Amino acid sequence: MKASAREAVTGVDCTARRAAIVVSCTLLASYAYFYEGGGWNQNSRFALVRAIVEHRTLRIDEYASSTGDRALWNDHYYSDKAPGASLLAVVPVAAAAAMARVVGVPPASRAGVTWTSYIATVATSGVFTVAAALCVLALALEWRASRAAAIVAALAYGLATPAWPYATLFIGHAVTAGCLMAGFTAAVMMNRSSQPLRLAWLVGLACGWASVTEFPAAIPAAIIVAFALATSGVHRGGRWGVALRLLAGVALALACLAAYNAAAFGSPFRIGYVSEEAFEGMRRGVFGISTPRLDVAYGVLFGRYRGLLRLAPIAAFAPVGLVLLMRSRHGFAPALVALMIGAYYLVLNASYIYWEGGWSYGPRHLSPSLPFVALGAAPVWDSASKAGRMLLVVCCVWGAALSLIAVSTTAQPPGNLQSPVHDFLWPAFRAGDLSVNHQSFVDYTADPDRLRGGVRSHAAWNVGELLGLRGLWSLLPLAGIWGVAAWSLTRDARTPLAVAAA
Image (tube, rainbow, N blue to C red):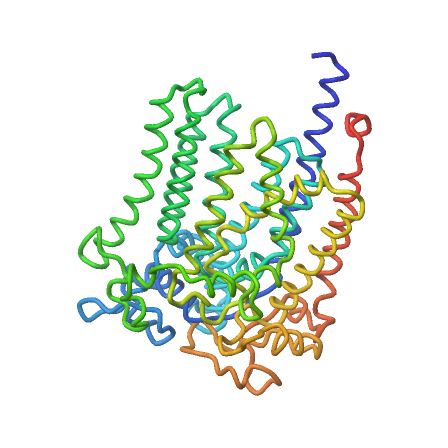
């Protein structure tokens, strides 16, 4: 390689690396800026974390009064959730609890629980959503998208879809999305890696842990593993070497699940949902999953209640972008995998008896597919005219604005609202009534009729409020972060090859 060409490649790599750092810092700051308080789902998961850290047990008897998402087995309460997200949070929470003790705050106090649950959320949902966005960025660049297109796709996923609200909640969907996307990215990168055996381990571990975090992720995880195996013949490590490491990674993750199930429920094959205390519908079909319904599929995509395309219109371009990717030299198989995973989660959501997801912003059961959907944004951007790109920008701004409204007010609007944005989120945001959730990680429930107006003290907060700002002014520090990031990313996206190499 000539010196000038080598310098050009080095310059481009440095610019792309800088863009990745700015994207990751911007997204993590946007997620960590908001603390959404408690809810049944996250309280159940965090109860398991507290039980392990504080009492070295899997029983959540001491914390069972804070959630209805619990399993009753042999006269003891356990979290009914898959344990993946909770197990990932144990070490960060233990460290946060130790820090709290140093400054004189008991970890079991309300202030201590707020602090440790905040760390649990950022360290799992926040970090894994950032990881998924970086995978979108890396894959777009791998498939020869322009730097601007790759940045748009990553930020569209991270800010302009419901992925942002879910990144602020200690639930399993964000971790699942990050694991699946990491496994998929590693599988794609194996084709050109000098160390495919290490990537095979990553594919197996990531896909296995996605299943440990959310059981329905087993199907897309299997699709990704099959994709990796199907392309492993071209690797230096050989098909069998890659296959053994893939399966060993999966087995290691599943062994953790089996050990947890055996310790909690007496059998490696018994899961918490079998002993679910509430939600009679979980006993229908396969844990509430039966045949898909067209009306639910329509509602998940277009409805005022949970419609994804109303909240994230950029997702409407995904099929077009993935079809464009299929026409590229190496893009057919990866694009097909992304389409299959998107279709799977749509069918899954349409088949689930509790398809609406309770107190939720958008179709949360669909959310692990969102990074795969976002992959379609990059090829659409590069093939679009100037007017087409303006339309994409408008869609991204719309989705990001709605997500900002949700995380600023509550990422868990009450389930009885038929149009959560119109009926609750926008009026609260417009009035500067932010961080309205009053349910903490130690409270059983929130009263939907007493969220607004300061009737009850709020458990949720944002960083601006901690700094003494009130109402919409509390978002000003976040706007400053975004301004700096926009300046940096715009400069990087427009940097020509010759300048980047200088």
